[in-house]
Length: 612
Image 1 (cartoon, rainbow, N blue to C red):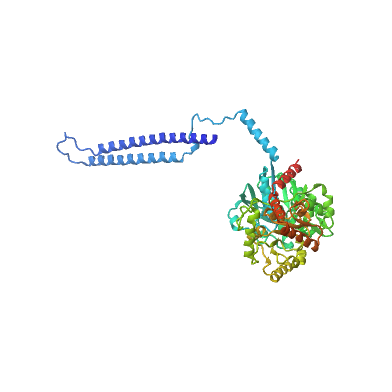
Image 2 (image 1 turned 30 degrees about the vertical axis):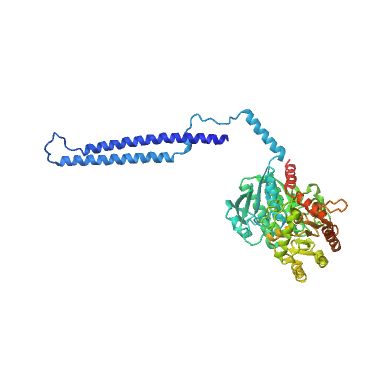
């Protein structure tokens, strides 16, 4: 408000100065014009009455008359030119040069004002903790490029951290497949050439920038590595690509002169970041940062022979020992090296953090992880509750919230049945499956029991792509159970929203599941999850207890088709026989906090702790 008043005072003063200057210029021009007229009148004056007889014109008189006319023209031209010069000078004169006398600030900076500002700053720190600058580095980020849950985390977690007084940048590759609507808004920040390989081979590094929701996105640009249509191609092509990306991302931070407190890197594609920070970049500004490596799925590790990775990284030989990147006799493991050199390790649920330290789930890194156990933490993911919101979701036939879910959700079921060619009957129990079609997701269990699931009262809806054996199996089930089974072998964002809202229950019978987002989205949409007790599924879905009528889903423990069928039957029994208990569970699920807020606070605490 104070700033507005000062501006208004300055504008008013400028208007006064402008009026005075214009008035002076007008008066001066009028005087000069008057002088011109006087001269003209004198030059063209008639002979006086005393000269009753006209005198004979002489050459001398003619010359004098011509000289007087020239003088008049010269005077006119000079007057006009002077007026124009003064006008132009006034127009070009910067506003800053106009002095406003005796303009005092509306708000005086007193000791009381300073003290109030300090108190406000202390309140921010007390509420959100000290401000931290964090660089997120990973291989994908929604909405630019996404193949799985990593893309969702890279998008939603930085947004939540901005609300917690963090300064956040996200660095990802500038893939060719990023939609043009984002590329056209990117701004060029600069470029340079970077040494990469052990033979001194250099590569171009460009930086393109895009800002949204308080988060700065920096895209590392290099057509040689990122011109493919997909972010991931094959291990042979991906190893050089992500060796380059890890080093280029750090070099870009130095180039932009932005040294974060924490570098938070994700999965094997960015796992060389902690190794580079502790070695090659240690003497540089970015070398002061602490590093956190998050494992989203331990199965994917970035393993290749030592000579190849050593060539593409030019890292010192000692990092390839058994305690670092070294694995077996001749291989280097990029994720293993990142785990060794990172200051902190996180994974996406508490249960998964424990599971990966066992032989069954450790993917041959269980001993390595047990050794680094003191710096290992599990933090459950959240979801973006603005994107996943049944009250505002534009894809739904009928929007709803926790207050009207029981009455309004049925409209989405009928719309889904119609769209997918299923028998239209709102009383049927509809089960959904939205998944990558791979072994990890427990699809062999579903294949084994699906003929026993489908009956006159039950329908199954499937959405996803993956292994051909599962794609073919689900197509066959649709053909065999026409009207009660729908298999959409594809990925369609709109249809996924429609399924979450239109089905009664969602299957997630995973062999292992680091966190899982589908069960969180399902609960947000009032759809009851049926899950196996593993990883994040165990941490987020409390099993239903019929004696106390609490819990928010149905679970089974051992990886067994019979136990999956039992969990489905328990869900069907409650749905048909105790509908009021089912409806209460639906409302509990919708009321559950599945946002990033709590998880982001845990990450913020970790950033503060690691930088002490």
